[in-house]
Image 1 (cartoon, helix red, strand yellow):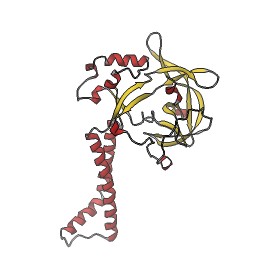
Image 2 (cartoon, rainbow, N blue to C red; image 1 turned 90 degrees about the vertical axis):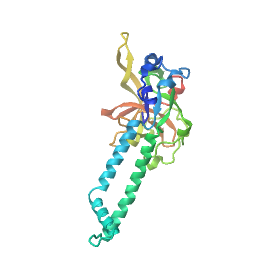
Image 3 (cartoon, helix red, strand yellow; image 1 turned 180 degrees about the vertical axis):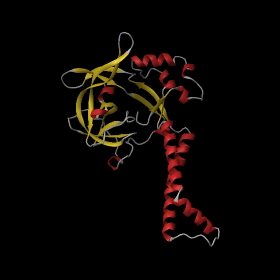
Length: 295
């Protein structure tokens, strides 16, 4: 998912509590592998809780900021800072040129921005403010359904979605993350419930590849689906999925982008990314109509 982490009770509750300690949890997961949990599956709220951003991503961001700060503070800046400190202490032996002074002041401003951001990340992590909400319904795992993929016939397609009840304090503007100026200030106003035309420009803002542009490539045969056979073993199932391809040499999506909304230039949501065929740079998404149709 796009920066989302759905975790079990061990990650959501007191440290050390195991999933097996929650009555019915293991059986619930087994049922959800085969069928879709709904709003009446109250056990969902106890075992599927969502972080956004994930703790993993937060810790990685903190580590990255710390490394950047260490790099900036070393070398030339460290030497200039030491000489400025001697001058401020009254030393007559230290000297700093005007160019070095300007460089030092500029670097101090840059460091201040990085340290402020690092402080926000740490407070967000330590205060557990990453907790987003609870899963209240979903499609289940490895679920394929027959659906209208075009006007002529019904074909099997993957369903992979979850409905999250977001905590009130985490609710915000209904807009994509502004990885790019093209989406800054854009709001998701409507759903694109009409049939997409081949070649329609589609956008995505994802956790891994950030802002990308592509175009609708029609319904394609895919091998991303799974189903249980009569022996209870998972096997590959051919499905037919809505596809999007990149408009540039860069891929439309990368691992970690699953769960990102796919939307039009006008801000209408067309669907949600869930997988792809990287070798052919073809990505697949669930059309927004499918969850609304009762799947």
